[in-house]
Image: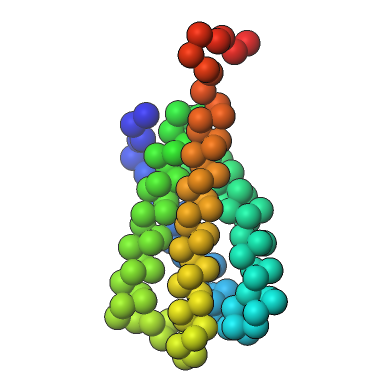
Length: 135
């Protein structure tokens, strides 16, 4: 389950990339968060995007099935810490509308949770059941 240095470096870079993309979405499309219908659609659209982010994490991090959950946790933890610092001390990076920033923060939390749930499902789905063998 241990990750190599190269894997960790790839995951750190990926978490920075994901953070930049999500921040740009919040900053450049605040109405997509504020508008009730678009905001709800954004939450639904997070499902396939989160699945893709987990797949990208596996591929870019060159993760074995037993490393997937750990790798997604590394990516999510780094991005969440960046979000925490940015929301606390540099919230202007997300935009100037406090409502959009608040709704963007909710969308971020939803996305992190969905991504981790997908990784959990993938990780447990790849493990054989006790007493069963996979061929």
